[in-house]
Image 1 (cartoon, rainbow, N blue to C red):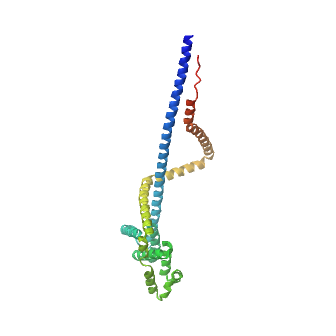
Image 2 (image 1 turned 30 degrees about the vertical axis):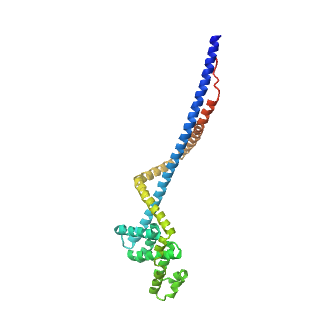
Image 3 (image 1 turned 90 degrees about the vertical axis):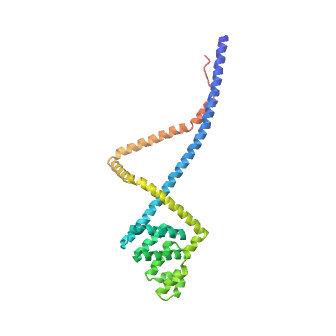
Length: 287
């Protein structure tokens, strides 16, 4: 009997010790799981933020590339070469941005139109300067102010007089140009000196930095674009040639997705299962 009692005590003691061990394991898992979860969330957030930032930077760089391409073609169509003057021209555009808080992209778009109209880069730059002053002086955007300058250049002063009645006081075209300059010269730079203008200039500088980063991203992915395009083309051709097989693949993929969802749910709640086991009494056989 003593041996039996001793055996029972040993079993009970083992049961209690096992329960304590499981409780400790459950607590340890729970503590580390919280840390891992926090670290995982932080890494996911950081990775998402970096990916989004690089994506936006690449998008900004692509938009700038389109603007430069448009300006290049406009200059080429009137016998000018963007490549030959790009260094000085881009420095001038950047300087205007820093003074007026009008973005380089807006300037390139307007400059493209003015070059096509005048056929002369220097004259187009002078008109762009006046357009920026008119934009800030009237509260219009640069595209709208550029259109007014185009009307004036074409001799359609009636459109300007509708928006700027003071020009009616001038009789000749030369006097009207002089009146236009007198009314608005310096408006753009004065705007750039205001607090609002300074904040916009800072924002544009940040945009320029994004464009530079985006340019690096574009350079890095450029060698793969053609390969990816060809791969997508081949996959599309294969899908068109094998519609039945594609349907089966889609069904199997959907089933796998459901299975992974189920397994993932079990793994997600595994910590709770461990905790529940630690709290349960172990039903060990006495004999």
